[in-house]
Length: 93
Image 1: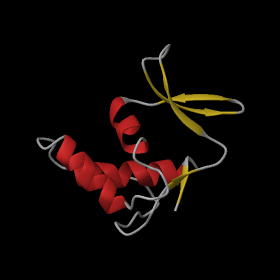
Image 2: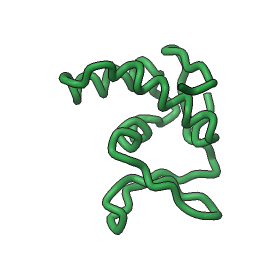
Image 3: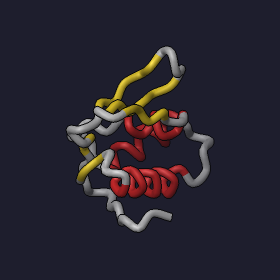
Image 4: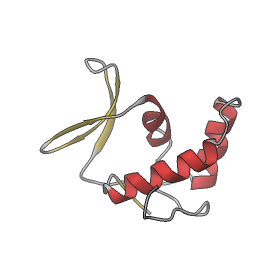
C-alpha cells in the first residue's frame, strides 16, 4: 500500500518531466522521460490516460467504474495506484 494518501477531491496532473503516450512497439501505454521509459500495465495506462489536470480523482474513479462495471474494488485500486504514481513522481496533486 502506498504511503501517499490520495483523496477523492484532488486533481492529479502528469509531472512535466514525463510524457504519456501509446507506444505501438510496446503494445502499451508508456511514460517517457529523458533517461528512459516506463512501460505501464493495462490498468495503470487506463488510469493515467484520464489524468489530465482537469479531472478529480472522483471523476477518474467514476469513469473507470462505468467502463469496467464488473471490476470489484476498483476504487481502492485506483487510489492505491495514484498514491504509488505520486511516490514515483509521475503525477503531482
